[in-house]
Each structure stands twice: as structure tokens, then as C-alpha cells.
Image (cartoon, rainbow, N blue to C red):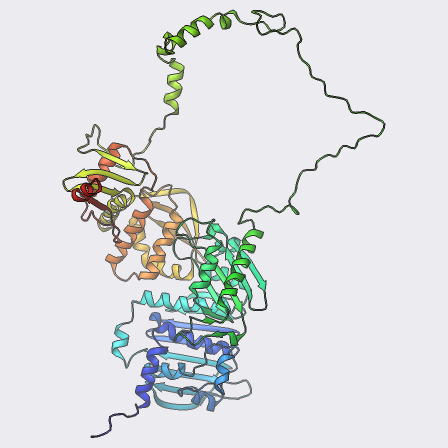
Length: 621
């Protein structure tokens, strides 16, 4: 029987390694930019075409490589950072495994141009699918230029399963943000399809955060600073006004490396428990400095999950630091008796040669309440002569002719004025509409009514979302939605990711009724909004629309229409706690059952549930 175990060819082994390291174009950018940072670059330019499918080019002004180093850099397990196993536990830089360039070269066509400052000429290397093509001398500037073309050209299955350009572009921006936030001293420029998307100069941490996340965040950041023997923590947390339902910027960095840590995330969220409503998420940017020997960064292929040796003490330090920062900036109500401005309390000093005098009380010594008339306090005869009638009324049960009389017209008019009036109905209620069923509203949230099979319970907000969704979707498809102009246009600052997808949605947003003007530098003005969302927070509405587009992609028109209709419906729908009269409840139910699907919201949440007759009978046994 022949042997069955054999060694894989290098080309196949490199493709297997590439499956771990290079998952999408964003992985290529991450590896190349981290290599540029390790080379000491202070200015990095990233050029991308077709969300990285066609071209990814990273240009840096680092120290460059010699001809020998440039050739060895593409070999597997080639690294400049590890000499023995102990070095794995004292790493201070980014990439170290030595498979990045070999993995990229295995699934793409790659070119490298590099030169050191002490060399007169540079080196040019070309590799395609792990096949070395040529190496030559070239004239180039100091630093390195990596050009990666046609990613996954030799692995059609991997290229086929890449997401849409918009999704891949969002992944690229996500990786870029994680790198740019932790390297504020480095200037970055990102060009996508010949258009400059991001241009960041070297700056402070706060300026870098504002440059990436928008100017609105500048006044909402609260600094955090603490130094202990276990960990040093610095950075910023957002005040409660900066919290969002979706898309809150939340970043942890340890030793200049991005990480995800659910346990530490709970520590930060615990500090906001009494400050935010359910579902809101505050932004935070926290930077940890710890001894490299107390963490393990190699427990996950992407190195975003890190194991800490002292997790519980660090959890308590995070809580204390964030609570102190919130308290210092009046985000948490507190009283400081040492620093508060209290009014001066006058102090009276007793003179030794004087005796205290009692206070004088003025009163009328001639006043007698049992006298019918007094000279000092004349009494009205009508006020004292009706006591027999009052007593008579008391014995008759308190029913007097006066109590049975109609209320004065002035009082009736006052009562009518104080009654609330509804100027614009929420639903289209027909005049003299008679309810076909008995309806009951519970806690301003549920509508109860009877059905043949039992008790029907309807979530009023979800029902209205279902109704409004169908209405907005029909208006979008028929291009009939009305627009309502805004007297004072609202300014909105977008992140680079949001600004990049806005042009793709501009036509559909215009059909909905939005009129948005570009003011430059990712700042836009909202000049008109769809009819039906007046008085709503349409800035948050637009943020939610763009956030959904960034997360889910927007290449398919039908998907765009459904996403926009759902976002508008969630904003325009009634809120919980809204009291509805019987006509409004009846109208809502009638419109709900006219929808194409009345049992669930467009995102799959239950609208109607029925407590069956059998269940009701069981509860009374």
C-alpha cells in the first residue's frame, strides 16, 4: 500500500494561508497600511478602484527596503520582528506573523516599488499568484509603493462570494477608521475611483476623532485619563446627548491595536445606566496601555479579540474612570460641598453689655369671633345669616338648590377652553364612522378587540408602521410622494462612510421628498423633507437611512426602496403612549387589514397576536 501523506506545493499552501489572512479587500488594506506604519511612515496614501476589486495601492514615505529584504518579504513566515518564541509575548508593533505579503501575492497580482534613503536606486518586484515574475532596478522615491490588482483572480469561488461594492467599501472604511484613530500623528489620504474621500492631516487624538466622525461630536466628547500599576487608560467618552440608537462609534484600543471586548463594553455601558433610555448607545474611544506580557493577541485570526490577564481589576478601573469623567463634566448629577457656590449666611455676634429683647406681636385685643359685628373687623350679614340653611342642607344629605343648579356659563366656557383639541388627526377617519367592534386601548400601547377565535391584541405602533410602510413604498414606486419645505434648513454632518453612499441614494431620496444640498467637507443641508414627517427628528432619520445603506448595501433598487420606506415609516409612526379615540383605533385597524401583510412589520416583528378561546377558558378554571 502506497503512502498517502504528502507535502502541499507552496502555491497551494499560500492559498490556504490566504484564506485565513485575506478575506476581502479590506484585509489587504489593513495589512499593507500596518506594514507602512511599522516602517515609520508619517504620510500614507491609499488609492482604491471598484472597492478594491480592481486596484489597491498603498503609498508611504517609510524607510523602505533593500533589494534582498524586498524579495524575502514575500516568503512565508518571513518577519523582522520575531527571533524566538519569547518575542511573541513582547510585541509592540502590528503585523508579526509573516504571512501577509505571501498570502496577498497568492491570490492577486502584486507589484512593489521601494527604496531606502541611503540607496541611489530602488527595487521593483512583480509577483502573480505566488509566481515570481521579475525583479529589477528602478528609480523611485524613498518609501514603498504596493500595488495589488485583481484580487482573487485565480480563485473564482472567493471572488464570486465578495459582497457588493458598497458593502466592501464600507468594510474598507471600517478597517481604515480603526487604524487612523490610533495613529493621529500620521497623515492619511484615501482616494476611491479617482475621487478624494478622506484627507486627514497629522493631529491630536481629539482632532482625529472629529475629522473621522464629524464636527458635531467635538462638543460632545468628555476626556478620560487614569494611570494605575495595571493599566493606563486615556481617550474620550460621549456625553448622553451624543448617544444613538444605531451606528454609535465605539472603539477600544490596546497598545495601539484595535480590539473588541464585550466584558469591557459592559463596564462602560454600566456607567450610563441611569443616563440613557433603553436601546441608546454612547460613543467612546478608549486607549489602553498595558504590559505586553499580560495580554495574548494571537487568540483570533484577525487579532481583534485579546485576552487580558487582569480582566476583573481593569473592569473596575474602567468603571471608576468613566464615572469620574462623567461626573466632572456634569453628565451625572452630583453635589460637591467643597466647591459649590453657596450663599453667604450672616453671622450675628452677641454684644456682652446688651440683653436680648423678645419679639413683639401685634394683635387686636378687642376681637371676639362670637360677636356678630366688630368695629375693627366688620362682618358681612350674608356670610353669617346662612348657617341655619347650611345646617338644613347638611341634614338633607348636602343636596341644596344651589348644588342642583346648572354651572355658570363662565365656568362652562372655562372648562371647554381647557379641553384639548386635536388639530390634525393621525388617521383618515371618516365622519360619523360607526365602530363595527368594541375596542379598548391598554397602556397607550395595545388595542384589544374580539375575534371569532378569541381576544385579538394589536401593537398600535407596529400596526401604524405597517400601514405607513405600504403607503411610503407605494409613493416611492409611483414617484408621487409630496415634499415639505423647511423654513430654516437643517445642517447635518456625515461620516466618510455615510457621505460615500449618499450620492447612490440621492435619486431615491429626492423621489421621497428630501432636498439635500452639498456644502462640502461632508456637510449637507436638509432643505425639504417628505410630507408626513414634519416635526420629527429628520436628521436622525437621514442618519438611520444612510446607516442602513452602509450596513446592507444599496446596489439593488428594490432593496433601497424597502429600506427607505421602512426608515420613514418608523419615524412617522405614532409612538407608544399615544392615546387614541375609538374612531382612530377603528381606522387604524381597517387600514392594517387592507395591507398586503398585516401580521408582521416589514422587519419581521409581530403586529397581531390572538389569545384563543381555549386559553381564556383555561385561565378561569
